[in-house]
Image 1: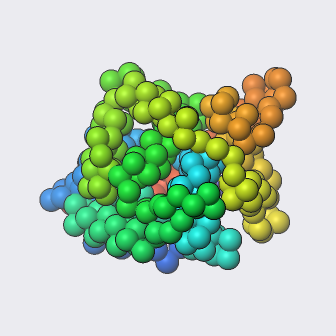
Image 2 (image 1 turned 135 degrees about the vertical axis):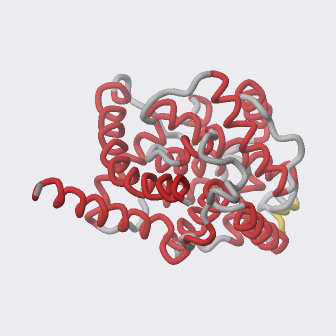
Length: 294
């Protein structure tokens, strides 16, 4: 009994620390979370709840950021307007709030967060180093960001998530994420896994490894994180690189030695996501219990 209570305490405290690390002061209030009267955009039976509630999202998120650096116009917008170098935790917290609100929030909370992002995008305009204009609310650039995120989250879940998705569940996840993309202003987002793969492939001809991308990739792989978290972040970074499409890893000049993925990276990443997931599931149980009891 004492051991059980001690484990429960450790789990509860660990869950709180994780929530603070990912969302910080941007975490949703209880009143903004989905409830029996408003399940939000998707609801507890959705693929989105399952995928986004898994610790593999940590790997998927970094994979998406690495991929996104390869589009020169999207990268220029980040380089010119983002404060990720000086406030990486703030950037993480805002991203965590957006994913949390659009996935687990009420319809109102999701809508408010989407409108906030659209307002921010209105200010993100300029010219890339090659002279081409960019705008964050350009539907084509938003489509690039969207497909890299959806592909990365789904890929990470398939490799490190607990349990597997059927082909129908994968298609449903892509279709669910398309709803968020449309609300942001993205043109014709893919609605199934095949469409997602095809859309990502079409963007390859627009990709390039620019100086801005090189600087950002260096920051993403070796960020100024506390010493105590360096080991865990190193595993996440290695897994994110290993999960990149071969063409993207080649463009980013991130070689993968034969055998290192299956023999070292993947086992370490699975162990990490299982451990983090053990803590994360405490929060998930709390929310599911609240939904059931009203």
